[in-house]
Length: 273
Image 1 (spheres, rainbow, N blue to C red):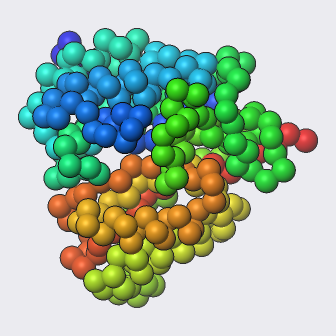
Image 2 (image 1 turned 135 degrees about the vertical axis):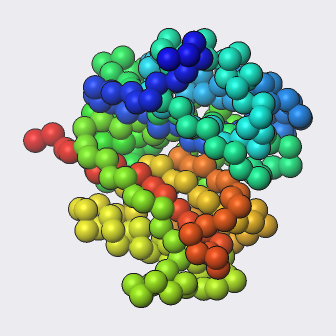
Image 3 (image 1 turned 180 degrees about the vertical axis):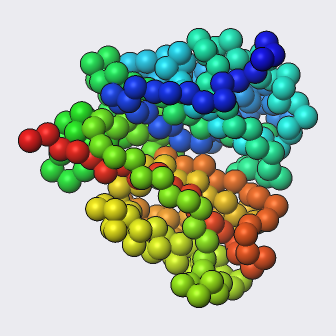
């Protein structure tokens, strides 16, 4: 295995799981930073955005088990990874995907992280109860937001979720099709999004939960111009704190007339007796 190889898989003894939203290089004023600099953007996201979230959960980069990278410049990524991989005690499971566009005009990278968090090591944090009537992090999921990031816009998604005891339900990407495989809402990104979210809720109810239990959402759109319609439906469908998320533009989806598809992870807590 080469010196710079990443781990093909990471096994985690999951006492607690931290999921951090897909984050790009925006400062506290909502302005994009480090134009044309993939390394600068990557370091900013890791050090200025993700490190505080990890610290709020009581861990550091050595606890990271999975790193997902969405970049507009795959050619430059190997050199960037060589510079930043030393931040991780051991190489995490790594996925790197090149995409045509991210949210914003100059964004070159968006990063997602999953980390293992021993619940005994948790620090006090700004937590928002997600599970009805349940306030103990060991028995549910709470949103994590460090004070240093509290003045940013978290209307569409939470910065991170910390999960205790419970089941994770991984949802395959869901497209805007009916039971016969016909596309719903051709040419209407809002209608397609409503259908996708309705199917997601139906699947999770069969699993003993609902769309309210979604803690991570990935949105794949064929055109960033449809983002306002897609996000309007997300705001209506999800309660606050909303799931951590990543929104990327892709070159194509399974159906030629699909404008959007969504993949999710839900957490259904196991309450202590």
